[in-house]
Image 1 (cartoon, rainbow, N blue to C red):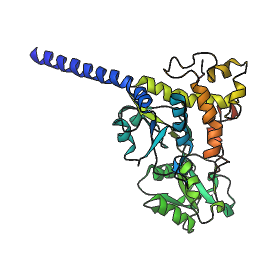
Image 2: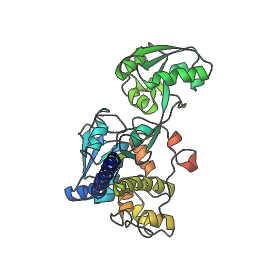
Image 3: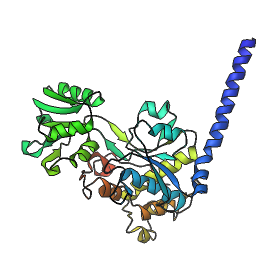
Image 4: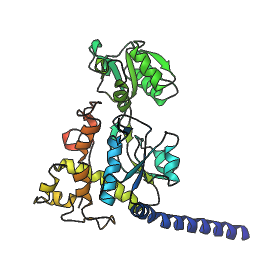
Length: 342
């Protein structure tokens, strides 16, 4: 009985400690950001189109613009962001420890990360997946035409396994040309040591920029794995999780209803109840999130809707020239779909 009572006391103590920690965390991030007057955002050490410093040292990319949108929603100023460059190994520890308020760094949403690491994924801001890049002079239109091809691939990665599965499932053969690093893999492709280079599609577009002649290569349309990328926050802080989640949802909804950074002011006069709710003219406004009523307006006016951000950073208006593909809105043949603001 004594052992049972001791065990019960331990469980109660642990539960109490957890609840206390959760309670303190629940009101900490928004308070912290509001008091310090800026948002701390974890980004990559440099991935063109996603998070990368430009020639002036200014951070830019689709992940960077999400952080700017979050700052606009909470602080009313998209410039109030401190960027912390993190490697893949550093990123989760930095978020868990509170060094950063949000991680926006081309991070794949998985079961393990969403549970065992004590993190919450806000949503998906880029649907990625493994793809193939070929030289244009081969005249290929589809990965289904790659039977017998030599393929440059990085060793020790799930990319190798996905590659083997894809060719086997499609009854095709290939010759792997294996390298230790992404840079070596890219150089091998550029030097003509293989017909094809495979990695995540976003990586292919970024690597293409470093080829001697970027226009000599093209990315094929097939995606052979699921890599949903999105912003991440800590568990135990529901208010901050909601703010981060609905900031992304507002950008996606704004594109669906035609609200842009250029017409946001004009749209304030709209009679469409959906538009009025997104911009905070009517509806729940900012009460449930604990932030300003015009948070949606600030996000769209200062940063833009999802489509604007995509085109500017990774889309046809950027050096990467990625087509919308599965990142198009749900009503345009893509996966992008946000719950309603009402």
